[in-house]
Amino acid sequence: MDRIIFHVDVNSAFLSWTATQMVQEGKPDIRLVPSVISGDPKKRTSVVLAKSIPAKAFHINTGEPVSMALRKCPDLVTAPPDFALYSRFSKAFKDICRAYAPVVEEFSIDECFMDMTGTQAMYPDIIATAYELKDKIREELGFTVNVGIGSNKLLAKMASDFEKPDKVHTLFTDEIEQKMWGLSVRDLLFLGKASTQKLEGLYIRTIGELARADLSVIKNTLGNKAGEQMHRYANGIDDSPVAEQPRKAKSYGHSVTLEEDVTDFATAENLILALCDAAASRLRADGLRTANIAVNIRDSRFKNKSHQRQLETPTDITDEIYQIAVQLLHEVWKDREPLRLLGVSLGDVSDDSAEQFSLFDADTEDKEKKRHLDAAVDSIRSRFGDATILRGATMNTKRPKKKK
Image (tube, rainbow, N blue to C red):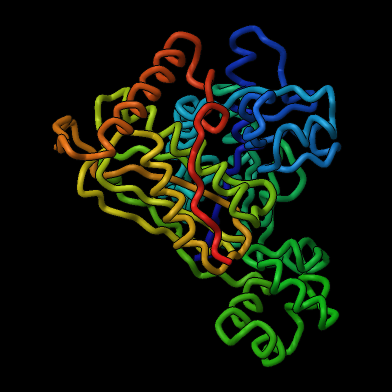
């Protein structure tokens, strides 16, 4: 039986979700103008987390300082992030997807795979079904998605990245030569920047040229395993299953899919700070602490990696969580392959508020100061909105020294 896979991807997710909420409140739709999701534009540490389609015309990049984005576009509209809102919208659109497919794999906060294989009796026109799903999400939730349909996950993901927004595209096996082989080799999923440059050095500039190239040459250039894998992908071959993940024990976390690759620690650390701040704020709101901190990354070859650390004493202090998360980031990102996704997860949570302090512990006073800061920030947010204050704009964080 031929496989039928959907890949559903929210268009400019963070900005779209914020815009949807603003429209529901009777405010202008920031998706229609140059706009970004970011911290306070007056603060030097604020960075761009997401941008609108009109903002792309000004070459504004995800992860760059807001001050730089404003120099490119002085009329740029800025709006703060709301990770609690994003989590609700993420769950809502995936719940709609689950009503259509027996198996749904969450790929990130704003995208998922659906295995529609064997559903032809229920959905005889699979393309019409994709349009129905896309329109249902737009009509019920207020934001748009792209749906890619393919013979496997690779092709479905490639298809969803074709023209945006609010589109349905197909990329079946018999369409590979027509729709995929003419694309730049840079557009092939999972192919990193360094590998792309090596292939271009061999005058392999399109996916089709890679697909037709001598496999031994590709292996000698990229390595045996990577070379064979990229050659298979260029030919549209991908056997990986759509896997429904088991539900995890309660944890708190956020991730961000990056529209442009992140290649430097300074940008990655700023994004990690925003993610830690959002997760820790939710943790405190529920009166809990975490004893396990994890950092997850996905690189430009779509390889997932994660590092975690178990704590001797549970914490709910944003700065403590952030300092550990940065250390984990440096541990897990040693190869410096450009990043496509960053995530922070706080697990092993408990409501045990007992914390052993020594009268001679020099850190006790510092911990209390940090708790007062967290409480003040949380109080302001509860009165004026979740994203009124971003920690990157208010906290003097210590950064680990870079190795020479």
